[in-house]
View 1 (cartoon, rainbow over the protein chains, first blue to last red):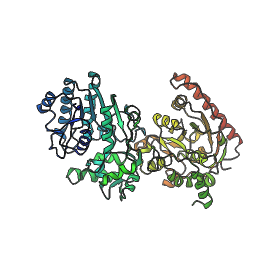
View 2 (cartoon, chains in turn blue, green):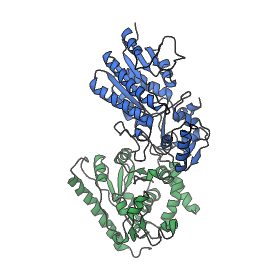
View 3 (cartoon, one colour):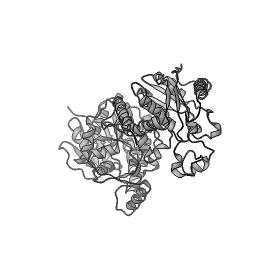
Length: 306
Length: 275
């Protein structure tokens, strides 16, 4: 017997490795990344390649690929120029390959940040809410572009069962994205007089959601929500943090200067995440994908401690 | 400030509130039953000792989903605070009225957090729909800022009512309880509204009263007028919320008429603004 072959892009990241470690028990996994890929199970084929190049195409020729999980989007907010090209062209090339190779399933990992924290937001945003995140966050611009490419793929290739996931902030022991890093600060900066509702999801739960997307015969765009919503202050309290509230005009000035001279790792628009809510509705993923988080709120929050 | 009597009363009332909250003590909108107590104590003091509210008909507010539709006045939304207090202090069992607040509130530091923790939400149709489906009591002021910041010469003249609340009531099959408030009009009589200047500061209005802005922030303190508040019979309307505007407006007119009549009756009975 031969297991279905699944190609995972962005497999060298912490989330990618976690996903591959789970998937390889059921699937024949090809792990693709531009970065060196280490710590993978022996039965996984590692392919160090740029998804825009021939190497990936060759991999499709060798053995048919049944499914693709595309999470190889670059999120480094410092590296803006090459990043946009990589994300847009890479996604486009990969989707062309997917159509040509007649894969059955395509799963794309986007983000709930694509809606953007905004004071005009309704409390819960469903999948039809406008994608305003790019207005302030440069990295979100890439996600919006990728979103458009995938949306048109839905129409042009209905034969490929396509799922696009928009998870809330992913946190976990070895995850090094902005929300996890922020929650690891002992004295995190907050904005005086603001305390937005936040949503977090444990990295294992997002792996579970990707697994379900591969297994279930569904297509569509799904917000993926963890164990619920909580005020930022309560999350920090649970972690035993001592927040430093800063008046918002001052915070903006400090952060923009610190970011410009390279002292601080948080781009200034990240402040909007500790000022306004970007809470999404996970109803569709619950009913159509059958997804419900397994980790409790406490487990999820405390997971950043590693 | 609060006498122990008020504190104990509020505590007893808050203890009877349903505790439908998420993993870290708040619901998805940020409402926190623990924090409600802190906000409710000063509000209850204002209710009992400052505005000395006379409330009638509170027993007409049904259980389950309901829209409380009220007239709006007084420059600062003390009327909303007093309606919420009545729901908390006078109704059995107590309920939290979820007021639909202006869209600029989430931009304000401190105010935004206090509002959210005490159960208020931004007045978008999606929020209202979701809360009604959660069987909550929603408080709306369809006049909005038009009613709140009108000048003293227009007191007790109902301003234009939008139709959004009626469409939501129809769509969600929610009864409407008209709530009339008399007294708030006189708490801060506005001689003028410098709305253009207000907008330059990001506020929806800038009223000029005998005390504000003359006395600075202290001038915002409302006069100790007496509030008369009446909850009317629940109105139930047939429809699905997709009707033509004129059909919906006819139903809105019935709510406005009910409010008008309640206000007139309360005004006729009143012997003075402080009594």
